[in-house]
Image (cartoon, rainbow, N blue to C red; front, side):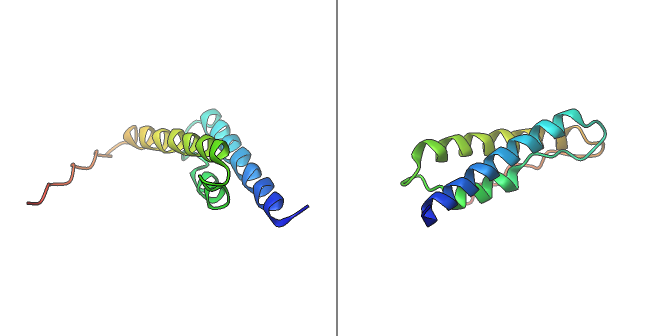
Length: 90
């Protein structure tokens, strides 16, 4: 097995771990959300768009879902306020 294969296997494992953490987070109630976003970001370090475009796209999609889930969970916390949009500078 060459180094590229090991890197790809590791990235696939990180993607799968991120997915498992997301499922676990959905099942836990009253816990901080587990989104797996860090795992997906780590996987993207190994799977570039140029070398592994389909894997890259799948991981990007999973990262998007994880971040959306995290944002929704934060919005449900007592006292949390949505940040104001940035003011455009001229």
